[in-house]
Length: 198
Image 1 (cartoon, rainbow, N blue to C red):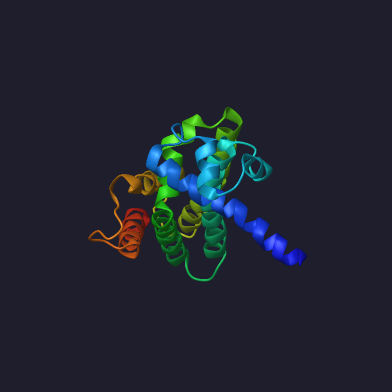
Image 2 (cartoon, one colour; image 1 turned 60 degrees about the vertical axis):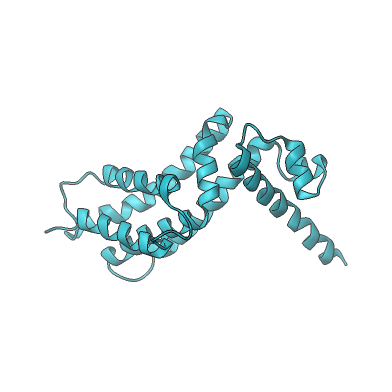
């Protein structure tokens, strides 16, 4: 019987996040009230505050769950088998696919990050920096082994690539002419064309 209660409780944060994501996408973070979120999720304000300290925490979690997924997958790819070229290609394609699969979450976050508290903004930047550093380490590995161009600054390679990834929300449309996989493959190909030695 305790397990059933635990399962039911586990769905409350998921419902809150799902409804917050939908409402933030439809109305914007600043124009969505806590009351609207809890009514849409079918819970009380007490339940929201039990799982999330504030609306700010919900916004942070909308993005953090995507970043956690991407970080886990990057670590698995980066430390996996294959050449550095293959691993960088897989890592680049994966972040594009996971960004597209969670496009509402990432669009909401980038539109509303400035509304987070300074402490939360600092935490998000640190989490994202760790992800970018792991990605950059693949570029550096390829440079050390002579596969990638040594004259390129790895931090600029990463910034350039992720600028394109973060821009996906402005133009990518589900059901459009390109699938997530097609976009991911082309982005990863472009990255590798730019870093490989001629």
